[in-house]
Amino acid sequence: MTGKSERDMEKDQEIPSPASGRTKREKAGDQDARISGKALGRMVESFMKFPGIGRKSAERLAFSVLSMPKEEASGIAQAIIDLKNSSRYCAVCNNITEDDVCVICRDPRRDETALCVVEEPSNILVLEKSGTFRGKYHALLGALSPLDGVGPEDLKINGLLDRIKAGVVKEVILATNPTVKGETTALYLAKVIKPLGVSVTRIAYGLPVGGDIEYADENTVQRALQGRREM
Ligand SMILES: [Zn+2]
Image (tube, rainbow, N blue to C red; front, side, top):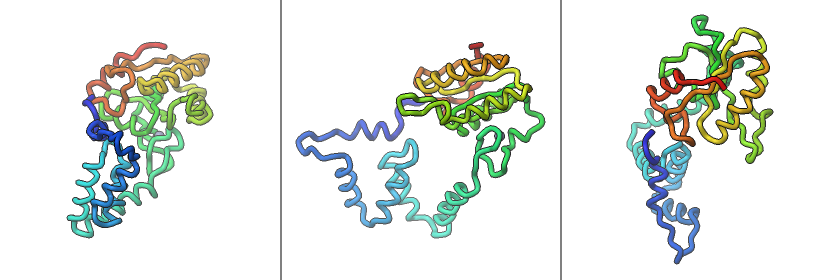
């Protein structure tokens, strides 16, 4: 895991001025004023919606769009639209797919007795890259967070239980993040899955508590899977 994101570092550099008492919003407005053109300002704001992209990077990206041939820039805009229009959640595991059922669920070579539970579809990609796991997945599309009002009914837990109840699964590997939300989710799942008579394991993380599976490198993910323990 690398250190701070660029956004964090930019935040650190942003020294609040108590004398002026200006809000961050006003400050952002001033920055926009420096950028000539509303469209350019909008592009910068748009790029800042991406994770890890601070204002400086967003400005650099916006200017690189400006210097691109028009077709190339249109291609990027179209790719975003196509992605949003053609992608959906797999009807079985909630992975991202362009078909009803994703390629992993359709693959007959995958081990159907092992089911790895993750928070988000992007986590499946990280685990797949490590190349260690040959079973199937289930994305919950979130994590339990009582303080934010996110309960079991807000996650794809019923679908998970139905898959286990079908009787083929022997081991459920809980690969939720090593965060408070992820741990809360893992404990809850262990409680409801164990009575179904399958083995429930929790992956070991070589990550500091509060880390995210998203930022783990392939070796860390591999070790985490191999070091999983019965809950
Ligand atoms: Zn699937």
